[in-house]
Amino acid sequence: MSAKNFKKVHLMENPHARPEKTSHFTARILFSLLLLLLCLLITGYTGETVQAAGKSSRGKTVKITISAAGDCTLGVDTRYNNAFNDCYKAKGPTYFLKKVKPVFSKDDITVTNLEGPLTSSWQRVPAQFTFKGPERHASILTKGSVEVVNIANNHTMDYGKSGFEDTKKTLKKNKISYYGYDAIAYKKVKGVKVAFLGFNQLNGVTQKQVKDSINKAKKAKAKIIIVSFHWGVERTYEPTSLQTSMGRYAIQCGASLVLGHHPHVLQGIEKYKGRYIVYSLGNFCYGGHTNPADKDTMIFQQTFCIKNGKLKKDDSRAKVIPCSISSSSQYNNFQPTVLSGGRKRTLINKINRISKGKHVTIKSNGQLGTGHF
Ligand SMILES: [Zn+2]
Image 1 (cartoon, helix red, strand yellow):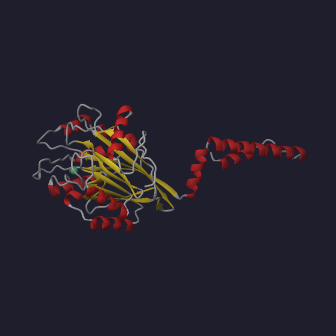
Image 2: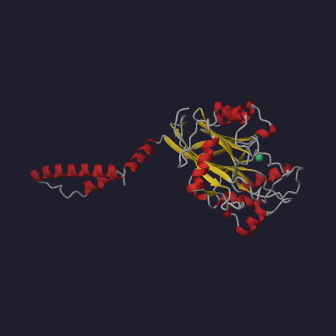
Image 3: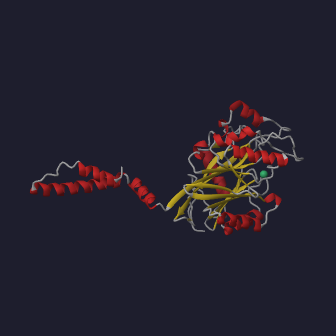
């Protein structure tokens, strides 16, 4: 109940409101004192609620929380094993993201990289590793509260053009937005337009392409612009100079957040001009390997503030949620899990180590430290 309504109710029920002059005067003083006390009590006990109501009544600050996670390969390369597909058959779609869903279902948008097509095509391209999952595996994403996926990566064409088209059709059917190459995904949350742009830098991407796409999103009146790059060297913890220059360039052009994928392991986070570059989110729900040596991963979560229709510049409300790609440390059971206790601390230390010199400090609770860089 608001303080205003409380007052109204109290006024109507005031038992001291008598017609006699003296008692009326005393009653008024008593009533005023009582009101003051009530106001103090309400403000004291529900300070937060009153503040929140004040903010929303101005209607000018909107908060949007976006969670980003790493590679989701929702299938297998049948030449090596069928483990992920067997797991789906045995446990069903909700099993895979069950342990991270409490995080994903509370945000406004969850985005991951879909590394590999969802198709029944048999037109495998000649390559050492080619992944695919049946169309029904899209339900892993919907059941896990993932709304947006990047499809600009080096496995998206593993089953040629038909596999790629099947994937897009399947995602559409499951109401999962996708982005990458020419496709920009737009999501409207709380009246704010968010744009997602994806580039596969392994095929070569020019600065002009990045700039043009970001300008397109700006023209479409997107207030938050998320840019994904598929880049870097596999199993390396340091970004290349090309990653750094391209990531920073995207921010110079107007990206609100840069997300990196491909190295299969985590890379550091950089704060640049008040924005973040997450160089590599590593694997996440990853059917491509039954027991990778490094199972560390994370969910990067940022809350963006839109004030008077504009994205606030120095917004440091971001956090890292340390995870493992598997709830078993012995092998990959394809069930990403939020870490706690000692393992959480160890992983935060590691992310701090690989983020050294990048103007980011992660506190023990996962929050990114504030600072002006
Ligand atoms: Zn890749």
